[in-house]
Image (tube, rainbow, N blue to C red):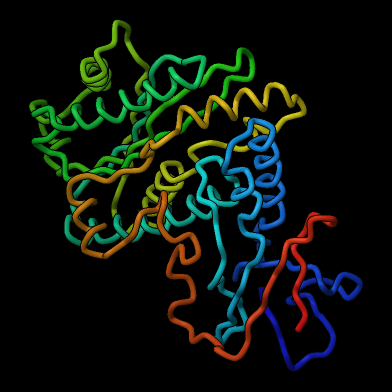
Length: 340
């Protein structure tokens, strides 16, 4: 968002039009409106489902992001500097912040990897298993998948050329039978020798067999593999890597899956997802990517700070004397600027 304190009127770069001058609208540098209102509305709806299900954290989720405090930098844009987030795995507001943080961290890590390993090659994977039908099954399946992935990347043919990886687990809901599809997205970085000989190269059929073996499955699972060109001098290749990062770092669970017109269905899905995701790590790094994550002193994208999510505007000086506070209005279902 851009403020001009030298103007009494509000122009196109300001918060909103004059007739709604107290409504808070946050814009990026490119003019895109950040979806604070939409995410908070979803979060409130989620808290109401938790309340019906008698989850103790219902009030905590309801209070998530009620007050947002921003500081202005020397360009006039606002940067969040104080807020309280519930960090529940199904909270839309937290998932939005979490996905942005994970994406920003991953891009920073990958940039550093490519500096140290300029000839490395990247592959993007999706590893799947059969759908499950309740929270207990989902919880067990997610544990099995995390364990299976750790085991698989230690297989000699993979480990010999693997530089590192980042992986996330996503859960989607099948709208036909309300089953749960849990799958892993992973970006894996290999030495260039991976593609140079039959000895090192792993075919799609091999990957499928490795995943089947690691998971101890009695069926052939679906495994999707895409090679990503990584010529750092090519803008097209940089874009391909960025798209893969965004796919890996997207929401682990989408609110559209449990906020529908069918309340009975929504309640069952939230109940199952809360049980299934309980104490689950859905984001992890390995190898050189894990080492760089530690070297850069990055905190967890899952349960770390959701206020400072990237280095946006860090090169710009903040105006210590100019702050904006946005407060959630329960009746109007929107954020409004608190006037001193």
